Length: 465
Image (cartoon, rainbow, N blue to C red):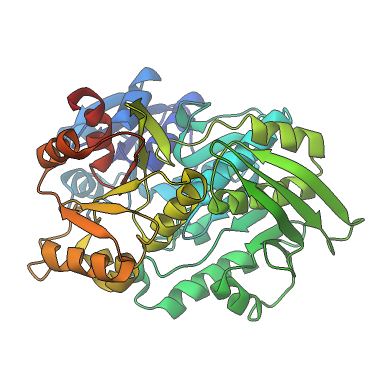
């Protein structure tokens, strides 16, 4: 990777600034004193956060947007024939991927990099919360909005940077590492990696990149991580999870409606064995206990005190779109969640079902990308077992061309068969509202799930029901 030398006179243009990762980096660089602007096809919460910092947001993609620009940063979602990129190439303006710019910005800090197929945003937020509670004032770049910050990025004055690194396009291998967490490895992003073995090899390279003076923290319950551990050249890692052989073992988990309580046994980490009891996490679900154990393991290894860690977890206010409560009406609770992969959906529904008692759970699922549904069709079909009813919305293509082989009715039949639950087909947002007006009674739990426009639908229900 070529070295990027930045001066405060640079004018840095972000192509696709509305993305969560791009907007976060743009805000960090603006706070550092650089002149920053960006373009995107649509406005959203991310662009609004940028505007509040004084970043100019330009509508659409046009040649004139880069007239006075000296550096261009592009999102991985931007195609190479984008008019701004073509103009930048013609004018010999240097172009960098977001991850390249990020790597150079954080290179002067000590970095904690969190990656994995699922749970990395919440885990990143938990690590950031604990380190912030220890008054270390970290720089934070996350893949979701942290409720306490009302943003996904913050420039800190301390020595540490806490970063969520996306594995979807291999770019996580470009960031400098001191400490790292791998939450799990699942069959995701095979359109980029071509096969699962290539994905595994990428994670292997990531773990082995962790330097001798750092450590990688790996989720031992994950079968793919256990297989990967056997291939590692060095033992520069610790493990966490429920597995009995974990260095940081979760024990005695108790699940309540608004929080979770658990213990953590620490063994074989070069220090005296410890047993931390009654850790209270202000989140629900087994998957969040796992995320928290990863954060605790790493922070204990940094030398942070048990009482600071415990207090941070009690006060953790969560991440937007991670089982976010939207509103409550007639004792019916409405939630919004980013879950768009079978493993994520299963985890959310399992967590809710444990505390729901006899309450009816309704899943409003918006499939995301034809390619994902096609490659994981049967996994999706069987991940709604803890849902009493599934409202199946139309496909959100996320830029993919329409796949005529996808049939919403047949997909609904598969879900009904393998998850053994009732499925209702939804045509559009209006259809969803009409159904709920007629059929909701009281005390149901309604969870909107997906990575597309479903979040907007869930918030709109507050005004339309």
